[in-house]
Image 1 (cartoon, rainbow, N blue to C red):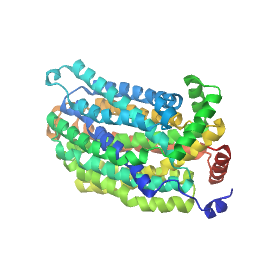
Image 2: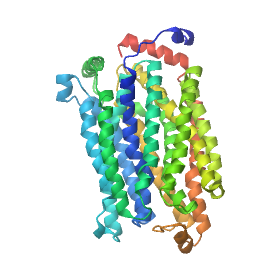
Image 3: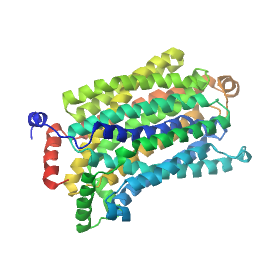
Image 4: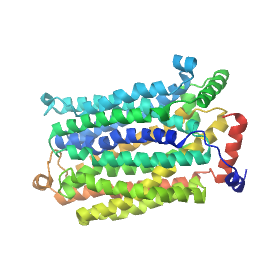
Length: 483
């Protein structure tokens, strides 16, 4: 089918806009917790608790390794475990989502519930930090793998996916806005108890969001029928081992190029997000609530740009081109942030507003492109194993967290940043090279992430091969295969 024929064929949506919005609240739910996690957890242990940066980074890297491993492992298991509720009622993912989501909220609280008798004992703090991170991530993976794997099966058509993505992206952006603006209002820079208060508040809102997203993650009759057909095909086919499945995933060039590109965006976002508290405290010399305004400007840029990206995506009808445009916008909007020592408070607000436009583009462009990739995979192997591939996609996303921790450890060690310094004045007094320590924050908040984005843009442009014509042909093949 040509592009012209595809455009003139009226697509019937399988889901209402209300269901799309409810499903979109999965992004709000996830961003509400992971947003404040990215802002505060590393800063809490290095600056508030005073854990040496090498140990703080080591815990984060070990957590990231487990984080990376358990996503493909859980993705593999979710496609191979056919639980009693699936055989009896036809539902596949909803029970797993419930089992993971609610305990995950409370696991976030325990990261900050460090017993006071552990203060000053570096290895005891390290152990508490590591264990709570492992529990947090395991529960997150259980709900997230199942929620994301539901997307390509729940939203089938090209335009339905784009519409759902547009709605979900706006809702997710609102979630990020709330996560970036509201939690900092509860926090006093160096008072540990205020971080616990913030976490309790996050749990309360998390419960409300969970009930809002329930209709969207419910599996309708059509999905249950597809699960049944897919299970029958799976049971009739030879069963691949985890390692054989891993080899198949890693040898899929299109999939690997896509996740490398996504890794670049995620690593860049993780670096700038975690740098926020350091920028406010040690560059701008402000209290933590001012972080709300800075990040709010960033997310306002993303929100305002959503209608534009929706228009562009439908106009060009080329998900590869949209991804490349999004990458270049993000790269160029990093450039003003490289001059962060001279921007001042207002300058940072303006610069992050611009960067938010690039963030919005990446948010919008990714799900439809990943849907194209998973459709391509389904045709190759003759069945849908979306959770497996989303698990491996998450594997590379989690590696971006390890990159963030490693970059922080190296930069802070080389530039003379002093862990436990409570404000800019204390950093100036204690650091042998305070100006260099400040510039180190600019390096890990702007320079390194911009370089990562630039490299991954080139890789994606060079080797990603899903053109609009190939995507359209894949849609027809999926219909023929009943997938």
